[in-house]
Image (cartoon, rainbow, N blue to C red; front, side):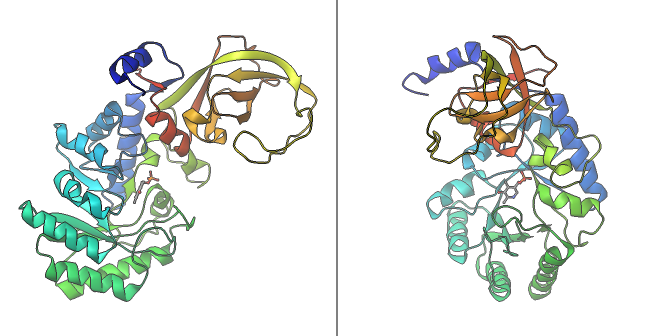
Length: 375
Ligand SMILES: *Cc1c(COP(=O)(O)O)cnc(C)c1O
């Protein structure tokens, strides 16, 4: 931050709020629960560490839980894993940029890919580094983010990598769902991947090590017992750190998972009663959006020192006090209705929140939030 990073960092560590409290025991328990659940279903998961910005203690808890492969979209996360003493493999989740091929080969054992030209560049770099780099070829099954869309081209690219790129190992195939297109993993779409995998295996005359059927959002299908047998891998981040959406959006509560591994605590800086409808002629808010304001008369509310700067969208926080409601936030302030709370909030009091995925992305990476390990 700014011009004196070391001093600033020391200041941040000693003073600055909000505080993100990290409970490693809860994260480790979540990680173990997911690992056991996956293995029971014939799936060996990779742990995804990007969502919590690869915070050291969180990564450590996940490694202690027994994961053998750590994955991230960001190479600096994987470079840090390489510098650690962890006995794990590293996987690059984002399709490599042509300009980062040397770093992919240096820091990653495995990468996800979708472009033949990129595969050729990886092969060439692996050869000059005297390495064999493993690749998982991605098929787009309709979510329309990464992956080869056409079946023929997918299979040809796989065969081409196997036959003509000697410093790559075609490690497997995979797909990603529920990211751009909101497409739900089903027996139908994952069976397409399984079928492609079988055809590639016939063509290359050996088994693929990995058939990777998606991310956290594939857990409900797995739990229901309907995951195609051939799918033997998932890439799991969210369910380990902030599993609340599994029960909420996906109606798939998993016993033993807790959302309280990460708790954000922020301080009340103004408290009192105000009208609920703004007064005056209304245009757009600070982020250029039009908002609707329900007129509920005068109500008690608290202003909290936390904002979009810290957590992205304010509806991605879950207040631990069920009697309060988040009304909105600008960059540095959050407005919270406390009328129905049984707590009598005063200045200096602390409000606590657990996080949805997006809030975790922002909060873990934000230098203005102190990270505090509670065990
Ligand atoms: C981020 C990411 C994941 C992990 O998703 P979660 O929802 O955190 O489980 C898996 N695969 C790819 C390609 C990703 O980019």
